[in-house]
Image 1 (cartoon, one colour):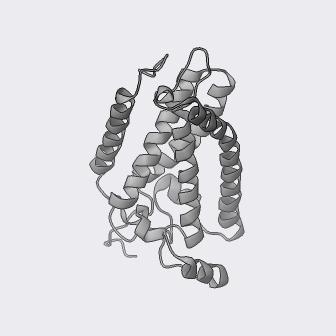
Image 2 (spheres, helix red, strand yellow):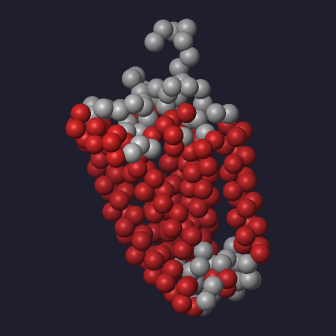
Image 3 (cartoon, helix red, strand yellow):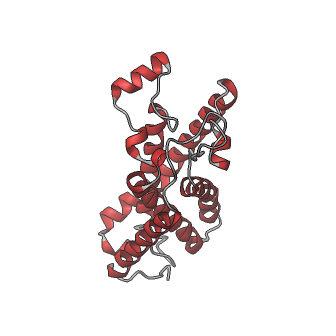
Length: 222
């Protein structure tokens, strides 16, 4: 690429920020739960929920490599990648794309189940009184065991990234820190930052509206 040609980011700023903030929220959610800081724990969960929903919306309205159409492929593409290493995008490979979707799905279920959680004494989630005891009990159990599944999946993710980074010499960490790396650049310009901020604001407002319409919990986030 010549110096006069535009250099497009592989991962734009919203993708990188959401990735690292969610990564920080995972140990924070564990620590706040262990310490019984349930109000703070709820805010961490609200942050994860907002970021995951915004990231899913960014998969439709975001930058080229952030869009689902760029990295979600069918079985034929996955088999071709496994056999020959063929890929048609500088972003996620066919396996990496579905791995990302799986992680977002797990985080979404974890965050939503937490909205129906309660310690039975001082804290109720914002949607705890919107469902019956049978539903909240089941969601509480899901919230408890799913976190361990997420930790196992994150461990597999870290191991896979390390293998690609140092075993195969494929730059994965630098683009997620700086946006791009030699040989790892995007195919088009990044979407404007205001679009990401607007999506995040709309997600937060929608969640606030849902919480406000729910029956009043014993203790609230607000």
